[in-house]
Length: 281
Image (cartoon, rainbow, N blue to C red):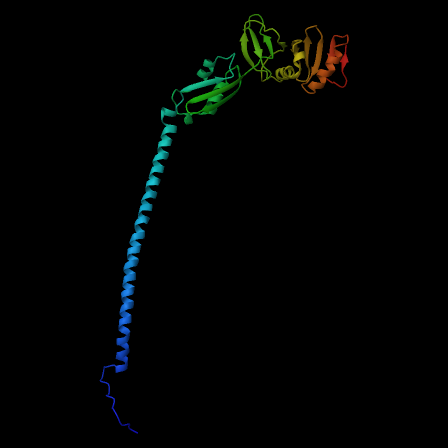
């Protein structure tokens, strides 16, 4: 049934009901506040991004400067070490030389003055010096900032041989059979090699000098001559005229002890080539 009282006015076409308009009116201030808050946050975030972007750019510039300085420093070091004479050779020290003149070693080394230290080929320098007859071993090292050190071990004579009349003199031989020096007179205290030929390439020469290099010094002082027909038949003559048949360089210590005992006996030939079965004749 129709109710009495106030009648509701029908809504006009295209017009929202009053309740919806009231609700929109109520929501509008909140929406505006939210929008303003978003705008403020947006402006703050842009400001923050700009503020944080400045240190990032500064860091990037610092990194670029550090990288540039590193490259320049590396280039300067390369120039200093490889091309500049500031770290070039100014002095060449020779250590261990006595019979071979140090200036002769320097001349053979042929080291250019002021050449940068790092550009020196120490192996090549060593090989040149090692070719010198009186030098057994060579070591070349750098002593920064400007000194090159050449350390040598000279060959030590263990025997000699005489080239005889019409020859070129008396030749000194080391323990490896290397003929490294010629002198005018026979050296005192060294045994003479009695061999068809003397050379470091000759197995018989190496066998004889090898034995002379390992026998006790007390016995070596008594040896006047040494000879051999084969590498295993080394023998020598002592100052008192006794002949010692030594054999090879094996069992040196035992042979020396056996020989020391045998030399107390009468005899001319003492054979210790087989030390377990020595003989005297």
